[in-house]
Length: 67
Image 1: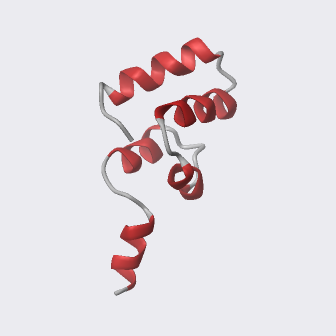
Image 2: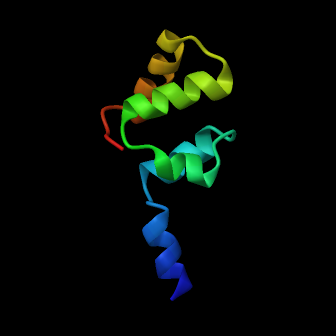
């Protein structure tokens, strides 16, 4: 039963891919993301990128998908 609870709190799909791609993200960081703009801001902050580069990285990763 705890497995079901864990999966409800940690969405699968793109969010698990985010954690795999950007290792500086904690599970709570990933869970807190609501939009791609949130992801861009976090990538920019955690990896000291300018906003344009962070946006480019997120756009390439998301490939048209939404969180």
